[in-house]
Length: 406
Image (cartoon, rainbow, N blue to C red; front, side):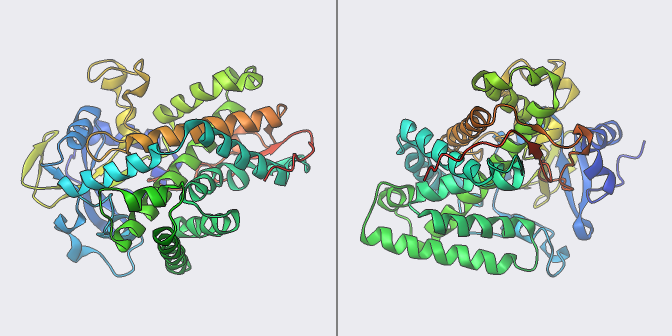
């Protein structure tokens, strides 16, 4: 068995059959796999649950700031993965007390929202989006609903009006597509947040931005702008794919077919199952070894990049058998929200769940006879080793009258 030849993550097989690819990697390489990213840039992919749990829980050994990476000289110009790894002045790259300072501010700002008012806000936005297509008898739930709800909710929580929220949501989608317009979209978003920050410093309001400005974290404008973008990016894409993946499961799996009318109970079940089986965050970059260390039988050198294989770890046979960790029965033992100091902030996890559950409940309440308009096996997954989500989710339903919700 050759355990030294790196696995190319851009292999088409990875995108078409990630589960099979993970099984093959595990059999040939064990829990820590040498891999090549786009441009044959090297890294380690951690796919063992025990090993990944250990990496995420030890931020002193496996640090976060990209400046620690020892392979920057191998990164080609215009590298498509640069947005994932570029050092930025935000909570995602921060370490130590700087990271804790920013995380406290984000948690406190999100927790400042009234839970009842938040559910009403999500419901109103969901209704507004449904109004746009409910009379037609058909829609693509991914593009027209799942990917828009989280960004629009966050924009409203930031204190932005619907028109600006719609524009920023569109720019966020352009940014994630990583096409030629991505830089311009990013600049527009930074500009919009700069205007928002200036207005809230002058006249505070009952919103996340005002609470972060007033927080003891004492943000500069640039740092606050970077964290607002990081929170929006994290909450938008992963929560949108979470909603879409759960809807796909409920519309294609016979276990949920008879319970669509009981969406208030089945939505949570589907959302938890998705975090185990089709986690929106398949893999993430990353951590950087602060010193030479042994991990899963591999020698990781100082500055080596470790990719976090959340989906593979969730599917670790040792975990499912109860040999490591709590096993599948412990619903929240998955690593889809990460783990440790750099996990998704607790308040953000609660916000994501509120958005996802409410979005599904409202949709199935409004359109109770909704069903896929294509065979289940024609629903395609996005060709990405990083994000798990459908390319489209076409559905049909009995046309309904818009409610005129604003």
